[in-house]
Length: 270
Image (cartoon, rainbow, N blue to C red; front, side, top):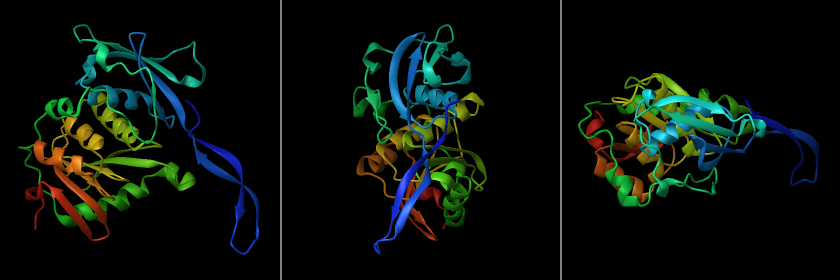
């Protein structure tokens, strides 16, 4: 496994003119090439760690796989350096990715560009229906999630430079947490963990993210069957529209004892 953090010298200054050089801990960002049956599919920039979860979650979000049994093997390619190429073998009968999904370019850690050909295709691609999920949550349970997620961010404590995604049950119990320089990667890692554990669809669960709630994160939650997405920051307008269309609950600005419910308010017990 590659390094998750690295030490670099920095010049620390203050407005008073004092300062000096000291080492600083940074989160590592490296490319990961994903191959299916030896054929390149995409390259994403990520923080090394939980790469198998990342790839499984990415393939699930793209609709290539839907269960752990759809994968027969995942392995790092021996002919590449630093374990930055991962090849996936699909089970017999699982169709390979469509040619239109192949992306022969690097995506940044800031925006995981989705492989689907259009926004409408994403909206239509719903492997699980979350609208009828009966889960109900109290504001108190939701309000406690950011701190519980923050307490589980081990690498963030050392770098201050990673996003996190946490999967919680309806009582606020933490099931899994993953960190990455890319918020979309952190979500893929959580969903991939759940897929490999045979937990999809994630009915009755809450996905908590440390940043904003984008359209892509909402889509990834929807694709995993998660009925509630909560974020400490703002959602985008398209994320709200998708949540409304899918029957998801979308909560933003979840800070302290207050929150904004942008969609699916019927799941919040008042």
